[in-house]
Length: 184
Ligand SMILES: [Ca+2]
Image (cartoon, rainbow, N blue to C red; front, side, top):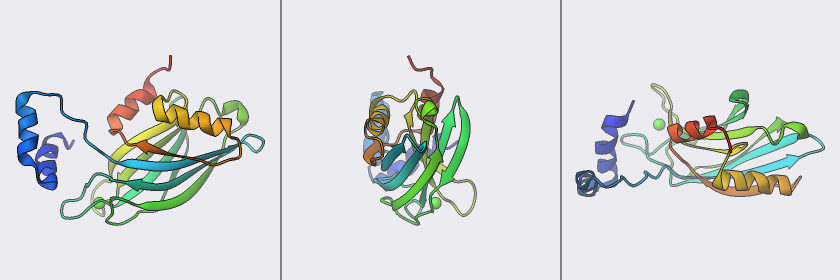
């Protein structure tokens, strides 16, 4: 996909080509590329079976556009057993790496199903021409670990109350693999 051109482009962006090449030469494990962070608020009302996801803001997003920054928007997918139940999108914020959204999305999730669903969050860079590229991804709910698990648990422990949490974005492939993995 973009694997081969990725390294030189980043080197130019960061203005640190020497650092990049030295890492590769020394054969050290490459430092995980920073994709950015996203602040999400989750709220669940068990009696109404209503899950509300508020995409609040993102920061330090990866720069995707040559000669610009990124044009981020967020896709929210509610899924169960690998099947998409519902899909929603925020608006696009032009030319920024620190977008403020504050956009809310509600999903019908009965109490009997709330432990089985996943909320998958993907930040994309909008492009006028060609396809929109994913910047990074994260998920909460069934099968999640770390912050994704903790945030979901906090939401369930605080019914009717919005619980906000920052999540670090990970590469799409990495999150897709975790989504497919069977939880222990
Ligand atoms: Ca763009």
